[in-house]
Length: 135
Length: 53
Image (cartoon, rainbow over all chains, first blue to last red; front, side, top):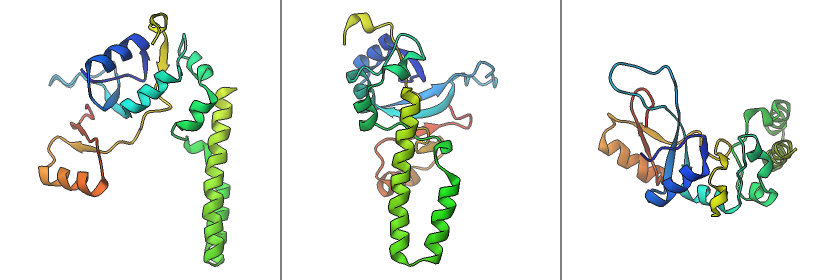
């Protein structure tokens, strides 16, 4: 089986990477109460991760002894290199509305500035999220 | 990889792509071909109606 889980042992991952030559692995989430009567016992699809990303995690040793240790063991350069997906809570809705309002009232240069600002804001949010993760 | 790290844990949740391109197992080949070529995809998940890969 070429399926992974969100929390896995390093030995499982190593075995998977050494025996399967796929470049991407689906990640599933097991559900205990899943019996449709037609043999579908696999978990729900949770996402996909590339082999390259797994290799980067292993190379930078972004793992820990327990589940909660993994957050602490992440290196800063690793986080800068490979962003996790941002939570929607990171994005400030007030800022979004302000930028949209100024873009609609202003000219094209202001909308360009807004898009630049929005990009910066996302970067700031990413850094804030990473900082909270590291703390 | 050091052997003493084999019992360590990895949390893949921050790094996985939570919204991959998926197709149903009843999709037509023409549709999948068009999806690959237009979106520049390299990987495509095939799921059934219970979202099992």
